[in-house]
Each structure stands twice: as C-alpha cells, then as structure tokens.
Image (tube, rainbow, N blue to C red):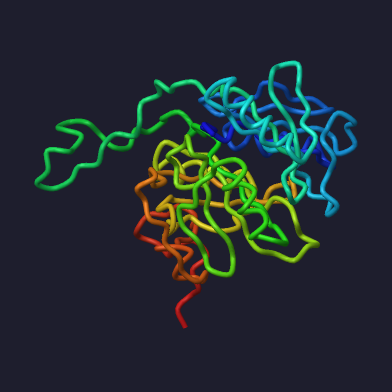
Length: 318
C-alpha cells in the first residue's frame, strides 16, 4: 500500500485558546484561530487541527480520554485509498467522506483517516553547509553561518506521532500486516518504530507498550530544516515561557536531533531534524530501552551570557 506521509492530527481539547497559543508559538502558519478551534500548517501543508473536546463531528474518543481524536495519513493516489478501503472493509466499518478520504478505527481504537496527500514540495533553502576542514563540501568563502536577525525557525513538515498502547503486538500487526508499514528499529519489550511503505523517514509512528489507562498519544513531532533550527525554535519556546521536557539532544534510533516540550493537548510536542531515511534493504536493529539507547547525547538550556562574569544561576564560590 502506497501510504506516503503523516498528513495531519486532529485534537479535541479542553482549552482551545491554550492549544492555539502553543501551536502558533511553535512557528506554524495560522490558518484558523478562534474560540471554537484552530488549524495550523507546516511549510509543506501538513497540519494540526484543534477542536473542542465535545465537538460532535469528531471521531469517538478513546476510553482513556486522550485528546488525540484522529490521525491522518496521506496516500499516493486514489487507487491506494481504494485498496485500503477494501482491506479494512473485511472486518470493520469504513466511512467515505465527501473529499474522497476514508475513515476507520485501528485494532486499538485509534481513529484513522486516509486521504490523497496534499504535501507540497518545498523550495525553502536548507541551512547553509558547515565548513568541514579539508573537504570540498563546505559553504565557501565569505558565506557566514549565522545571520543576525534571520527569520524565525518554522516547522517544515509533520514528522511522526507516538502512541501509548496496551497491546503493542496487536498494534504492530495491524499497521504492518493491514496497512503495509515497515519496522525500522525496535526497543525490546517496549515497541517498534514504523514507517509507511511509501515514506523513507525512519519512522512516522512509534508504539510504546503501556498500561491500559494511559492509552493515547505520547507526543507528536515536526521536522525542522536543521539542528540549528531545532535549537532556535526550542530557545524561542523557552523564552516565551513554555516548559522544556527533554532536550535538546540527539537520538540513537533515527539519529534525529530533538527538543520536546510539555503541550496543552495532553501530550508532548517535539522539534526534530536530520532523521535517518531507509528503504526495504534496511535490516531493523533491536536493543533494550534506556538512557544510553534513547540518546547519543543530551544538553540543557542555559540563558545567554558573555565571558567576564559568572554564568547565569551560577553558585557563588565557597
């Protein structure tokens, strides 16, 4: 099945205003921002929608009350949608929507929608190349790497979503056997990293074995253009009063740089960059989850300072 992308996420929330404020501060384009909802775009058109929790048009909520109400994947074409619809109709209800997309629930009760992908190619330049000693692959003479007053970092595309699930084997079987996802790597006794067959990114979905009462979304992530943009976006969030949860750092599986923040949609939100890409020749790795396996390195935000005085929050010498 030629599913090619994670297209969008729909949330039903308690505090629409706080969620709208958070997503706008992440640097997403504001398409709609009102008391009864919001719609926010990354640069390639992937999106997050905010609706009130009791909105009758939302898919049914999980029994745990998770605010994630629908995960939307993009397909290469209408033939793929027909193929998915036929497969799902074998054992569950499939709803056809007016826009040609289909909706259904996975084996754990998460609402899914498949639509023809509307991701647009990006013409935004990447970060300038680093100067590597004794290499022709450098940015060149008189090309500076940091430009004061540069535009604020903006998310390029919706990257991935992570679920807490009470039966990771059942969930993995659904996505791999019914929707054609591929496993790229695995934390043993925790869960797999999965990518749709038509997508090269290391993962669009990560499943975490968890107690039933927390079933739902753990985090979502947006790709930034570069590690520097992860740092710039995260620094901006901290300065605006949003709480850092984990990062900045760099993961082992996926190799992506990351910075996570606490999010009013009842989950975490991540900026990431430079994720590995794979095809079907890749052989999945497996290791136990732990601090060493979760990140190659981890940093901590500090306020800016200049040599000549003590760093911010430094303890006086005893």
